Structure formats: structure tokens, C-alpha cells
Image (cartoon, rainbow, N blue to C red):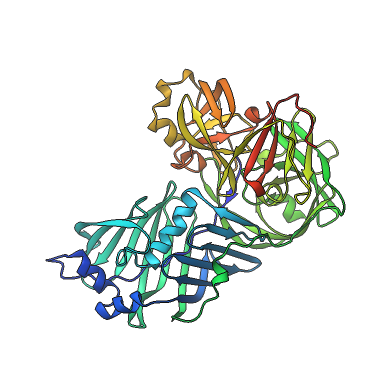
Length: 528
């Protein structure tokens, strides 16, 4: 329940010029929006689109390039300092490469966000044979002395985007949409005509209530050039940035299990020992900033991080290596944030270094034995799981394993969060939508606030008659219902968060490569 970093999705929507405000016909509006009938013909005959320019992501300046090939292929790459990030859609699968070279499929609402951008890039409101969607004229609205024609789009027939067309200039100068619980405002300016088609050259994205900003400045837009189709295909493997001991089938790493956290020793840059919390809810490793500063690491930019209750800015740092047992992670880009509130006494006096998450956990099958206090990390090329457990498939949400579960028979998506030192936390939107206070037993206020990175929250405790994930059933389970509507607890896409007080009843095997978690009984034999 600690922290995850998320990347702002780069989107480009066309500049729109409105028809006569006294007589709005949406078909005519959309034709004029791209520059008229000749522009529509150009878009119909379009074979490819490539744009390049500068990117300012929360004050970090770099470059971007994006490609689109009709009807449904999209690719975006951002390079900022030591970080390179890719998102793409090949017509079937959405995928990404994170700042440490890890490749993963993108599913859930994050996939919808990528396709939402592709919907507008493809001008699917003009060409129904591309991405599906719907739209509806909402009327004329005046804001700050400017008249706008308002159109409600539903890309993919899912979450809506409200677009505002300036009645005087015709420019679709702004739009408002949603990324989970965040309200995102997009502003488009300075259109140019390329190949007869109007494109904005300045696109700014700002989130309400979160330190999330993006400014894209388009320097080059090229149409109909040959594009290597291979760029849209998801790579088979991540960039090699880790080392498993040669000839070894597995590596065992002892850990401490205290106050609901798994704490493991690591070595940074081959010389400094730190103790870190293992956290599948962290989509990047995040180091304790006071410790990192004392070691002389310099910030390499900033990112937005989503915590349990809110968003914060996180410094980014470049680290040569992180060793976990005899396993080596090389050339790591990680976050740095003051995590002093999580500091604990270590058995050897080595400092508390932060949290270690996706970039380690996703590379190998890892068996967590809570009673034996060991992690067994398996060589992914030689691994076959023991068949005595219950296997449950998962998908990634914000790079966090996400399972479908049923609470008292009510279905929802629940993340598996090793950084959650509590048990089952039910998110505010899920609790309110299903009126859980009336369906759960012994609802009581929490006597003190709980939380971690991103703030603290208050709420209630209660008991659920049943909680089922795959073939695993838990009865009379204590749950926490936060009051917060912000941060992770305010997610409208995720029902809740499964933490260590639930998971400690089992041995669990996390296998990101095969998108599965295997639950073994507390007395099961070790995985071979």
C-alpha cells in the first residue's frame, strides 16, 4: 500500500473547426474539424503518421516520437534523461516498456487510456471502420467569455471525453476526460496544416488535484512515409538488466517479517547495505531520500507517484546496481522520497533504504514463505512450479498484480499488495457503490489513522462473511474501509487491496512472466 509511479499517456487529438453555431450538424462539424472535405480524403488515404518534438513531463524536458498506422496501430516513445518509456498498440495487444527496460502487456483501464488516444489519432469519429465509439452534441456553452460547442465523446464506448470547440475560431481548444479517479484537462493550441490536415502543435495535459503535467511541442509531422511494422509488436523479452547466478536453479533470500512488512537486505552499488520493504504495490523501486542523499546520489528528474491517499512528486535517481542475495539488477532508474515514517530498527544497524517492487518481482518466479521467512527466487528459464497449489491468473494494473475477487458475492478487481501491512482494504468507490456498510458485519470506526506514502487516512473496520479469489475462499474476514476518495483508496477501477495479513496464511508464488499467483497451503512442501 505504498507507492507506484505512473506515466502520463501521450495523446494527440485533432484540431477541430466548428460549423455555424446556429446550425450544428455533427457530420459537417467533424469534416470541417480536420480542414474540410479534402482533408478528410487525405485522412482516408493516410498510410502512416509520424510526429516528433519536445516533451516537458513535470519539469523534466526530453523528446518524443509517435507513430500511427491505420486503422489501429499506435506507438509512442518518450526519452527524458536516463529514462526511456514506450507505449504501443499493435491492433490487438497494448504494451509498454518502462524506464528500466521491462516489457509488459497493458490491460484494464490503462489499456483503455492508450486506445482512447488512438481513437482520436485515428479520427474514428469520421471513420467508423477504425476504433469504435460514439458521440453526442451537448449544446453551446460560454466560459470566460468564450462560446464553445460541446461534444461528448465515448471512445471505445467506455469512459467519456468532453470536447470544447471554440465557436469563434473553430479550434477544439480543450477537452476533459478521466484516468481512473483523476480528472484530466487537455489544451490544444497553434494548429498547422500538414498534407491538407489540421494538427495542433502544442498540447498540454493537467490533472486536477495531482502534481501531473505534460507539455508536448510538435516540431515535425510527416505523413505517408514507410514505417517498419515491427515497432508495433510487443518485444518477446525485456532488456537484459539483471543477472541470475550462472548454473543456479534458485536463490534463497532470508527476510524479516515485522509489523506486516517483508523486509529484505540489499546491496547498492556493490558496497552499501540497506534494508528494504518488499512491495508488489510499488511499480518502481523507491529509495529513502535521506539515505540516498547521504550516499551522494543526485536527482535525475521527477515523476508523479500515487500513494494510498494522495499523489506526490518523487525525485528520480540513477543507480548502478542493486543486489538481492546473489541476484544483480543493473542500471536502475528509481524513485527517491522521504520514507522516514516507515523506518524500522534493523538487526545489524544498516539503514532503512526504501521499498523494492516491480522491477525485481517481475523478473523471476518468487516463492514467499511467511512462516519460513524466506524468498526463493527461481531461474525463469528452468522453472516448473509444484502442482499442489491453487493457481490464479492475474493482469497488471499500474504494474501491480490484479485478481478478480468476490466479496460477499460482489465481484471486483483487487490488487495484490505486499506493501500493505494490513489485510483486505476496500476502496471508497467500491464500498459506496455497493453500500457495504449495510452488508458487512460489526462496522466500527478505526481508532487511529492508517496509511503510508501519500498520506494517512481514517475509516472503518468490518467483517465480510466471505472473500473469494479463484479457488481460494476466506470466511469471516476482517476488512478496512477508508474514508478517503483520493489516491489509491479513491480508485474507481479497483475494488480493493489484498495485503499481508491475508497473504500470510499461505505460501504464495508470484510469477509475472506467466501472469499467475499460486497459493500453497501453510503446510505445503517447498516449491521444487
